[in-house]
Image (cartoon, rainbow, N blue to C red; front, side, top):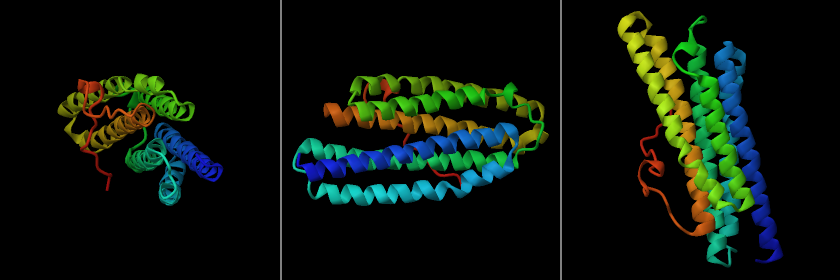
Length: 230
């Protein structure tokens, strides 16, 4: 790898890590706004979504420039995976924006803790994201592999929350609006876990050359039915 190309790759990595920091902050602030009924903070999360969009565009541009100079197959994998990871981070920002928007619509006094441990769910998905990104930086595919099964825990917590909310809705039909908002919020957190898992799979592919998507059962199957909240 030439010194100039190595510097471009390093710049690409740094941009990606800066973008990841913004994505993590967006999720933390969206959940903080939710549990504290802080509509001002929620509005900031929504407004700052443009930052992640711009990062994705910048990283794509850097990656395209680097692709023209990538001398080896391993270099090509690194650049293309960086583009893929930036896309996952942008989608995490979309999910954080969804949480922030829905939090603005929830009336105060909703017993959130009765239906979902949202702070715990948030901690889990952000830890998955951190481990996946640390594996990327540290060239540690085994560390990335360890992230993937954790997605099942997040899926189960989301499922339990939806079951609890459905049972409550059957007893209190008048609560339909805020129950649906809360279901969307927990689903958005579950999607963040999906994106963290996807990043982990990308790291495995980058350093091992093996595409493990859709293999190994539920641990590695992606959720392809993702859509932005509108």
